[in-house]
Image (cartoon, rainbow, N blue to C red; front, top):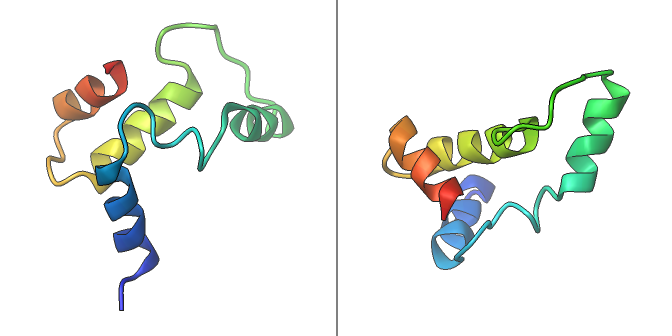
Length: 74
């Protein structure tokens, strides 16, 4: 039986583009940031993009930061 993390890894490997948008959409993350009173500038690597890159890095077989950045730029 597959654990939920293994299932998520399998789903991510089968998807192209940004696989996290269906799991953690921008609105959910923005609402959490607002509730936590987090402020940030609108830059290339917003908290949302940073979270997606972190998830790529943690879940991918290649744990390098450069690979995570490459994945979010696609």
